[in-house]
Image (cartoon, rainbow over all chains, first blue to last red; front, side, top):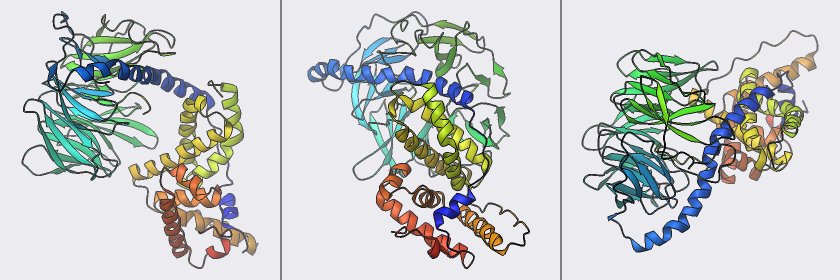
Length: 364
Length: 176
């Protein structure tokens, strides 16, 4: 036998393969491009914001009240978003003095990662340094019910898990984590962390650490709220979400793609990542019909409360990006007036923004 | 390639999908999975098309996506187990039977390698990539490629035993 290894591999792989589905590639790719364009604008704006906010940073130290317009509180619920160094909140805009690359909400305020990887705690307009995350790929999680946020600190001595209480201003190091470990959720005094294919449940205070058992083989953990977990699983090319309490049989939501899931604060509803609104009752799996007035694209990005879902939307690739405030289960949506015309378009967006999902929206 | 030129992308798919499928098949050992892998990788390539600048970059990018997606799939699904080997066809041609046996043995042995070792072997000895190119495709250091290739070849030798003389199959200097 005189064949070389390459020749043997050549012969082993000399099989008939179906031609790639070019139409499906272009369709799926265009959807991704459209959604990413929400995002690519963010880099430009963040860069501009570095310059704009440097002067602010020089004149203000930590603990400074940066509420830009304390009298500007809106009448009803509004969309939450950030551009440059300004968070747009339910009580009006707050200038945090640092470019907002990623941020989350807690019951007490907001936790922001800037473009240098510094984490800032924002409570009532007061901004305090709280720690550090990976500057390029920040990942923060916040608890709707408490003042706790969590993240992985890259550290010079190794990566470690940190929980931060915005009320006591106390950062707690919860121990080392492996490369690639990522925080998924913080809820009820526990941080949920995917590490080496397992989901660790790490108590913020005293108590034993646990590992969360998946409801199906090869399921990926997406989130946790009030005892309800969301997993994603893939069986023979068919993907599905599994939603439910660990001690019960999960609700199965089939034929969905994506890797994001947002549970409402009381875990009654879950909004899944998609190009169209996908909101489900977590106890029955029934889909809630959302009226987005014929918009070409709309997907949930955050829950303001148990019944109010925020969506990012658009009527066309060339049209403006819109933020919607939607009522669940009524399914009614209205465009957020404060962000109207501020976010650019999906096709060509010179303006960028961040959403309170804990991650940077761009490619990094 | 400054814009998302569909015609140019279609030509890239037409001319390169065969080679991409074959590499994907060697990494996952299943025709259906290889097709899914290439479809997913080409979708990501289409999204990245405007910044890839030329077809060479596009192929390198697609190969990188295939490699890392294959490794991720293996990790997620725990596909470390041996793939079922096809029955040898009956033939009176002893030489042909030897060839088929060698290919079957190789695919069975590849299926038993950890995903990163398998990817490193395919990239180095099927794709003929340098260690630096393999490291770029696998998002790792050159030293990691060396250790993965070394461990992968050692395991292949142990798995193949007398069925295939791996040393005889090695390209000159290939194991370095």
